[in-house]
Length: 189
Image (cartoon, rainbow, N blue to C red):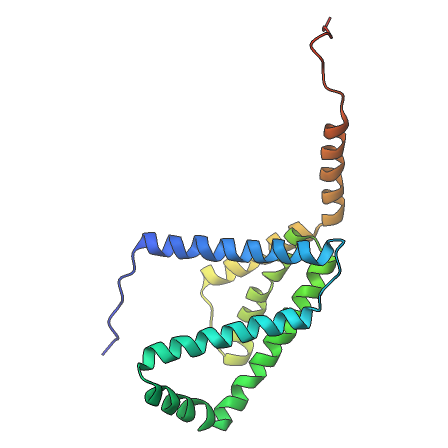
């Protein structure tokens, strides 16, 4: 018997999409700003560690709320974390890879434009698709393959001399800001 399908409104889905998009964009812009400002730089490993500690505290808080009592909370931790070290070791591998990925994001944003980073970061989707096909022997639909190739094409287009495009836009803005303004005493002929 199939699991009952949850009805989630389109408005809620759009809200979630908008919030996730804003969070991702704000993260990239804020990180790029803090890594390229003239202030003293912070250690990226410290920022990643603090982020993970905050996520751990939030997860523990949510678990405590869901279990309802301190006794059930302790039993849940004992059973799911301490009681299964093999599962804990399996989860540690992706956790370490994720920590390395976050540190590499700091390095990338220190050296790339935010837009170039954001688009290039989306290459994780085709990589995941390829790993799914090659390692898990899953198949992708024709529409999914078209989407993957379109995403790769978009990344290629953005990478096509991105520094030159940024330089041109910056020079145009600079030239526009240094043009003399017409005063009310000047007349046109």
